Length: 420
Ligand code: ADP
Image 1 (cartoon, rainbow, N blue to C red):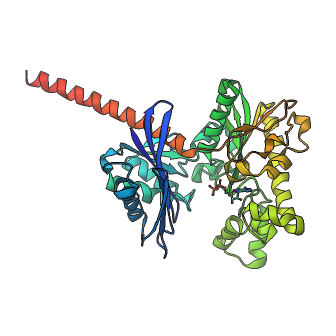
Image 2 (cartoon, protein in one colour; image 1 turned 120 degrees about the vertical axis):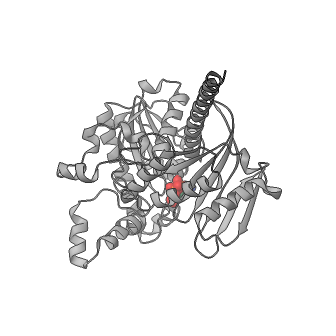
Image 3 (cartoon, rainbow, N blue to C red; image 1 turned 135 degrees about the vertical axis):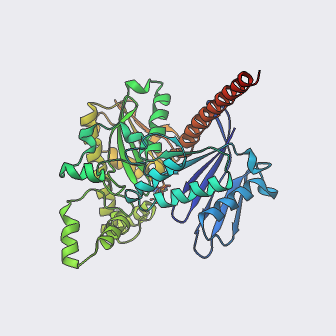
């Protein structure tokens, strides 16, 4: 079975084409990205047949971008499929499923409408996700489309973890609550950690640390997310590249009054001008900040804030988990920055977390980085959100196939009965 996984951002389409031979046998045939959709200089970077191919072309919208992806997958030297008909299912990454969509689903008009209703909760991502789904439905009308939600893995949080202490009527009226994000990533690395530790996920207490340009941690008990740092939106929690994470809720109100800022302007400051970028005044990229830190106080301060808050979250999740078996680092920073991993773990020896400096020199590959004396297994596990989406897509597409076959058998029987 060939599955195309599509991840649409506001100006990008990322894709991965999987060839699935069996339950655990997922081969990546090709992957790539279309960037700068709707802007001058749109370009495609495609990785397939062991080669990297780049091209520029005018791409006014997501539909044209996906059409281009199909063209690249099926034509000339970049071809990995004979025709688009060989794509048997499409899996979409969708940011927000709200309270109604808490697992992966086959997309139909009703599901699309619910994703549309969630635009208020995911204003930056859900519209682009919808454009991607609509384009694929149009270009591949008979192919099952499956949506996997970034919020879904956290659907198991208990009520006391997801309700905010504001008047309850706002939860009833607007569904304001913690949803959590990066769900496919937390799911992937927590499942992988259980496999690596050779343990049943039901017996494990894990903290998964997704540290990329967005940062979120999750407390995973018995294979289920019981709490996570991002909230109603991906703004809450840890210090991120450009997002503030936790702050006194009075601060935005204070600034709006003092500086005469609108809600939109405040939103922009908290989401795009804060975090590591806002504190350092240099960059949102921790590589730049790590390089600048020895000579620049604010760069070092930005790192210190990020590290300090990470420790606080680990401590609080240790408390609610009632112990800890594994601490997992993933995503751009978590997979690559030995400095940040080491700094986050330093001083947590009393929780049984001990790092081995030599082992911690690892980059972008699965490894234990804890010392032999560490009670907690500290691991680096590169995330693979596309694989989770592909697995979910396969499961639902197969189910639909079986249902269709049963329906077909049913109608055949009926026909035979009606016309003996
Ligand atoms: P996204 O969250 O956008 O999908 P990633 O998970 O790839 O992105 O994370 C991107 C971030 O990872 C970069 O902004 C950068 O801060 C960080 N990063 C990547 N490589 C390194 C590295 N070698 N050292 C420190 N930070 C890194």
